[in-house]
Image (cartoon, rainbow, N blue to C red; front, side):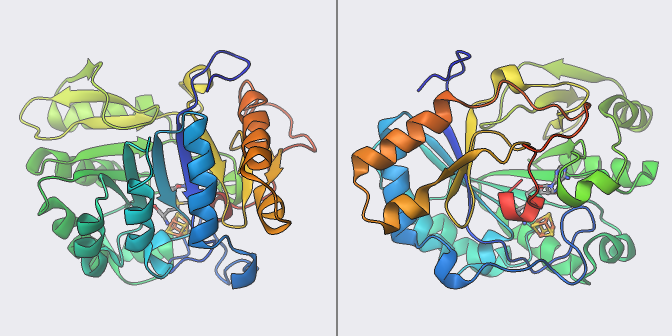
Length: 324
Ligand code: SAM
Ligand code: SF4
């Protein structure tokens, strides 16, 4: 489906839960957030029905996110169900990696196409400082397990909250020694992220060029999103940047977002959306669901306005509730 600004929308991000086993400082407070009850969260059957209607409107790729998607029971089962929907080409997952080692065989068997692992540092003390948990080893085990599956596309995502040069150099070095793309995501002023300054792409690029030599832009794409990539000599993987602030990409945005409780959103920054759970649980027909989804896609906002004054329409949810 094409929205009113001519953008093709073929990508859906689904938050499976607002719960998480980490407490990243820019995403969740120490004490966690007021959790929604199990009864309020969409069941897998409800998610499947929404996705089936979405395929009619042209959604072809689905990303499972959260909170932490792997803390929800039987995530692999949902992957299998969604992969079986006619029209769905790819089902991918973004995870903090803690439970990945144990769940990877099931996910691969279910047909997951790609896994993004979020990791902001390779230093155990800094990891604990960022995530307020001491479990870097488990994340690294998950990463190794994923790299052991040649059929899987694996990416590492870093939000540069630790600004030491060594941190960027060490993380980028993973792409030198492994078939892995390492991507730096500019901190967005959403939820707890508002409290942190963002580190711009150019400054990270300068640090990496000092350490590894020239970075050559490539037009190659790896996945569903707005990341742009660079090639470095001697590197197996690419280095990418997702720069919502310094390289605004709203004119190419291809996605909508479904929260764990069934709120379908057109844009990360705006609350505006539709309560699909209400339609489902009041006995709505597929035609009613599809019409509600069509309206949100058509009315998708033209762009974010991160640089401007906040408005009453802006999103008040935390990133862990929206899915990033
Ligand atoms: N728990 C999973 C994970 O960490 O990958 C999935 C959910 S998490 C909300 C998805 C992504 O959003 C992560 O890569 C995280 O680093 C990123 N994120 C969270 N808050 C952010 C912010 N304010 N700006 C940019 N990215 C953010
Ligand atoms: Fe959890 Fe992911 Fe948010 Fe970190 S970024 S607190 S892992 S949801």
